[in-house]
Length: 360
Image (cartoon, rainbow, N blue to C red):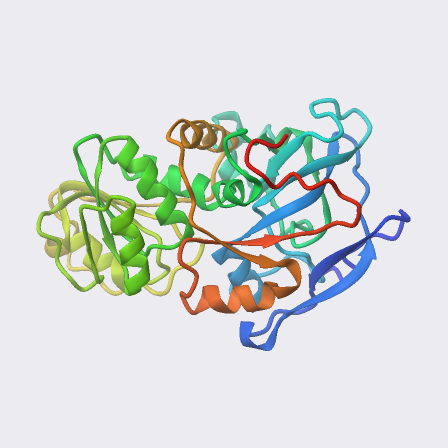
């Protein structure tokens, strides 16, 4: 692993950032707050003054070491909303002060067999924000301008942040589940991604059934229009045409398949998954049921999700934390105690506050 400091020293501007030196249990506060040099944008890149950064289960998997890390130290975070405060050579897409969003996919090669067919999410040279590169748990971060999103004016910064991963991945999972108008869609696990996906699914005309162990999560699902809610071990009143498993619990794959109608599709939306128990072919898979995984997302997914989310408009349930409380926020996330989406508020000295809805 790269043992060099995560913050470059070639520029004078300093920033506050949360740095992961080595993975450890989240209860041990793996992130440290430090002052370091801000990054400089390279060719085709923009630097973003971070206003907010969403908190994601992938961040949790990163800091505790569930994922093999390609580099350390590292600044996590990949649901970034902020304003462009510097541009690198050749970068012309955004003006200084433009509001942008950054997501999990930091870059892709654009030429491999996967990128050539529109599957850049499978690119073997793909790099991911807050994983291969320093992310948004900081006052500044850099990214290729071609992988930044224009944020619809209807969303405030905190509302936009969870759309950039929870929303995008949920949208791709919704598509791959083959959910349809008038169909019955099951959501297993009800956190940041599922509560956005529910709103999109209802807009598309699906009836949504939600499975969760959290009482507050089920209450939120009902408020957002779920037609039925219950625990994962419960059987819904009718078979489901589609289902999405957000919880990283392999044992739920069996329950979800048992609840699927003939010809139904189950999409697995997590980046990690515990072991899936042995399947009984006739009980779980027969009658042309489909199981498919979801691997991050493409820029086309992101553009589509932001467009439809603005049309609805989706209203994410937000719980905000100051940047310095990221360890506590991740602990709450690990315990299932964030109802909706968690967002870190990042403050920069002298920065204009553009966190209100409709800001540019």
